[in-house]
Length: 228
Image (cartoon, rainbow, N blue to C red):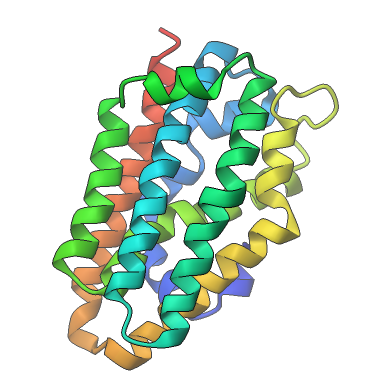
């Protein structure tokens, strides 16, 4: 998603409140090397395995979102997100990973990296200890951040598309379908802030968002370090 499309949304305010952390995440060396095609394939394979494990906990977070919801509309959104992950996204991910020589059985048996444990458990903890808005703020750097990264890479003239091993990954997150998923998350955060928010909540939400952003950057670090 572009900055202009986000306007003065809660997401944009949270992102701006941790601008340096956000830049470190969205312009990480892992991302840049996906864009120019120089990321070692061993790093990307390790990332794909951990991303599979991440998706499982992501599904749990949507189950928690349904539990934390107070309106039928929010329950439906959570149920739709859970179904999309379990019934569609994991299957697509497994199919994509298969082209990298990774089987679902191998990925399911892989140990979770410390970075995977740190981010997924942090998201779940914020959802358990807080409300739905806290959970959505913790999820936002992943859901909306990947949309921003995908669109930025696709729009950057320096990005190598033809012959780039990672072009399919870029196209997936730059796609209109994924951009719509991110936009819906931004809209729901605004709606929740209107119902449950107050000026005094912003600082706490900003802390949650910033920590989740740093944990996302650590996830990229994990991918790069695996190639050492």
